[in-house]
Structures are given as C-alpha cells and as structure tokens.
Length: 371
Image (cartoon, rainbow, N blue to C red; front, side, top):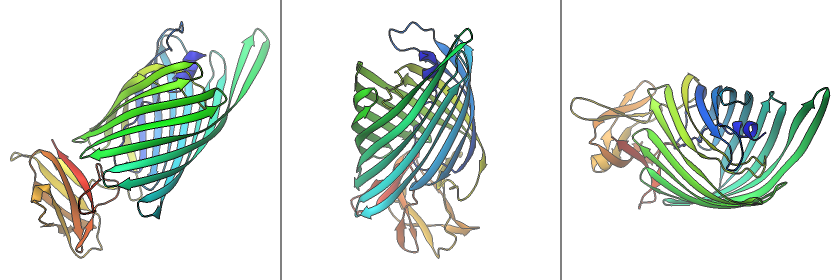
C-alpha cells in the first residue's frame, strides 16, 4: 500500500517564474521512489507518459495534467493520475490583491489490488506587494475519498475513507534581481490530526534555466519530519524542455500520504500553442561579436515604442515597427540587467516577465540575464 500511494507523487516539483505559454505539452520521463524510513519495501523505478494543458496568464490561469505511470523495476503496479486547477487574481485596494484557486486530484491503480482516491480543494487568497517584498495568505478547504478493494480467494472487501482538511498558509517573498527567496509557515487540521509546517524556498533564474530549492520542517501526529528537494528546468530549444528533480516529499494532511524519497527526469515537447501565447519579449542569441538581445513587443496599435535599461544607461532606444508589433536588436554584455519599455511615452513592462521588481521610482522593472 505504501508503494502505491507514493507512486501518486511522481509529479516532479516544477519551478516557475513568469508566464508559461498557453498550449499542449506532451511529457515522458522516468522516476525512482524509495519507501519511508522504517518501512520494509524495495525501491521502485517507474516510467511516465502524459499530457499537460495550460491556458490563461499571470492573473487568470488554468491547467490540467494527466499522467500514466508504469512500473519498470522493483515490483509494484501501474497507475493513472490526474491533476487540474484554476487560479484568478483581482485588484482590491492599492497594493492589495485577492484571489481564488480551486484544485482537483485523482489517482487510480488496478494491481495488485484496486485503489483509487479523489480530492478537491478551494483556496481563498490575499497578497500584498511593496517594492521587492510580497506577502501572501492562503486558506485551504479540502475534501475527498479513498477506496481500496482487498481480495482473499472469492471474498472481496471494500474499505472507503472520507477525507477532509482545513488550514491556512502564510508566506513572505523577497525578489533581488533574478533571485526570489521565500519563507512560509502553515497549520492544517484534517482527519489525520493537526499538521504544522515551516519552510524556506529559493528560486533563481540563470539565463533561461530555472533552479528551485526548498526545505520544510513538519510537525505531524506521527512525529516530526523533514521534506524538501531541488528542481531544475532547462529549455532545449523553442519547444523542448527538461525537468530534473528529487528529494523527500512532504506529508499531505488531506490524502494522508506518507513522506517518501523520489527523484526523476521529465522531457516535455510543446506541440501545440494557441490564443495569445506570448512570444519572448527578450531573446538572447550568440554572435561572433558577443551576445545580442532581440526585444519584441506585440503592440501593433502603438504609435511609438522604445526600450531602455541598465544596458542603455536608461536612455530610450527606439524600436522599429514590424507586422503586429515592434522590435529592435542590441548588443548587451554578459550580466544581469533591469529594463522596461516606453509605449507612446508611457512606462510599460508586460505582465508575466521573469524577475519583475519595483524600483525607487515606484515603477516595475523586468530582469534580463545575459549569460
């Protein structure tokens, strides 16, 4: 039973920064799981294949992931898992925003005995931003059910367990250039008892590679536990990406899944995009004379456009009009820079850019890393 439940957590942690393109991504990977300490179970190696769908943007988004897992070594069972969610943010007053998120999760395995779980959760949210600091408060209300069928000869017994969870998480994050540091804590009550957690997370953007490390301490009804891990997302061209990650999974107050160690790699290929999936606003490309950056804006109805930042000594550099927008190409030495645009004389930084930070003028700047 322990092995099957751990198999449901084979979704490698996904570090994110900025806005993901809308579309359909096909994913395939391999993961290795280890049982919790003190449990007499062999390790398992699982292959995975699935599809990921993403829509929306930084203030309205939705996503769904369906993954088929199949055991390749170590004994165990094949499984099917699905995860879906939506999230929306709304301006309230000044720097205050309110939001609402909903999430659903399902898991099913057929052998060696049928087991399935389904859960849903709703989260009201509040966030307050001031310069480089953002505070977030997130409530959690969840419910679900698990069912397992045990066979002994011709006799079949079905055991059903109703699940519930209520709790709250608080987090404070600080952005410094292309690095974000976060500290958070939470308390949750569920069918399994009271769970408390505190943790730290560090996310960095190096060129186009995103690295995220996290560590958490948990106080659970069964004792204290540590969780955390490292995840790295590497772009491999315009459509391919690789996600590598591993560590110790956290206790789940809702599903009551036991912590376990795991690691894996997932390759993704985005075969379909639609809607207003954003083109890269700043794309670094090598040249014989050093790195050059192509800036592009989809603002076809603007009368004028210019880019400015550290690399221009904050002097506007005019952009030229193209089909549907504006573009320019600049030689930029390696380093980390802040920048923005002047559109018809007004300061503009498109939503969803990585490393957005406020400056001393009360404006938001985007971050550009040139390797």
